[in-house]
Image 1 (cartoon, rainbow, N blue to C red):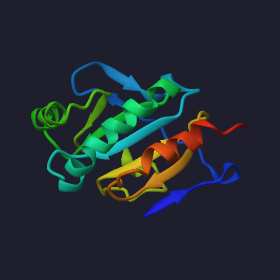
Image 2 (image 1 turned 60 degrees about the vertical axis):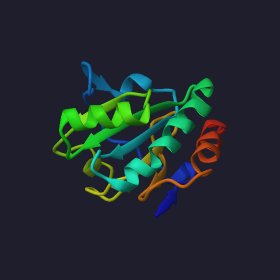
Image 3 (image 1 turned 180 degrees about the vertical axis):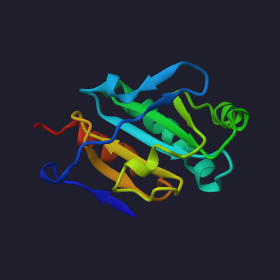
Image 4 (image 1 turned 90 degrees about the vertical axis):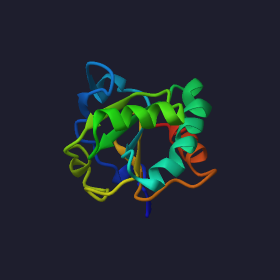
Length: 151
């Protein structure tokens, strides 16, 4: 399932904040004004493992445009999540959300499914919601389109 929302149909994203895997509390609100890609994942999830290299490549391909990426690890242990990040060379931050409390706040995505990827526009409204594993070649063009939007 891929849902793309036109400018007039977008709703504000809910609060996305919590402890980072290896750090302090983090709040996406600090990235206001930037396009943000949020990926919900779990180390135990085979499709998450398959798409991890695509997300890292997408991050590297769009960071010069000011795009921010954030992972949200769900239903996991901190050690397993850290191993996943190390194994796949993930260089963007991830929140640790073992209870899976953040995803259900997004009313446009399956509340407990992974992987799920959400792209927020510069106003932190949901522009794109992908309720399945990403496919090769689809993330970067979609993110670039959101970056190119003028309000």
